[in-house]
Image (cartoon, rainbow, N blue to C red):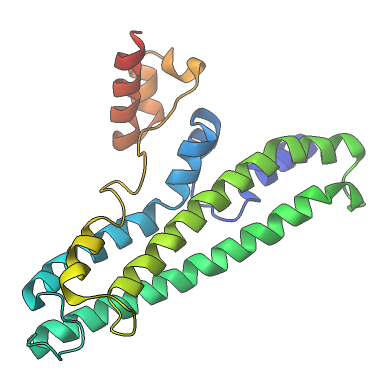
Length: 214
């Protein structure tokens, strides 16, 4: 029972991993699992960016209503900016949680409830995971801040440059959206994989399997 409790803790202790399945944590690469951990934020940011592109195109880059932009469009841009700030605040909090978590892991040998072997195992498994999760969160945070700045009238940004900058902030997928499966996962039968993964992950599994020629 102690081993089962320890395994559950190892899967759920990293901030941002509580919503991930054990399949994601075990079968995907660290980079892919980290990307999955911020997927909800990336989807929201992608949607905000697309709405911002449409609104800024209508105002020819005017975000303050001082260069002919319609007030209805300016209000949309203001709302998008405020929502981007809100998402950025959540990501900032997640980043700080992960940074504290990493520091605790690096000092895990000081915890009386962990014996030396468990402390070493925790470091080997959880430090790389937390580090990758932190990188993914910080990248999303940087993108949120960049989008917010591009929508702000306080930034030193010419109106005619605003739209192209927003369009180039990040790619459509928010980075590499492909999942890197383990060799064991790729050797599953079609039936086993279909039973194990959700539809989206199953499709990615099939693409990965095809690329490797299995």
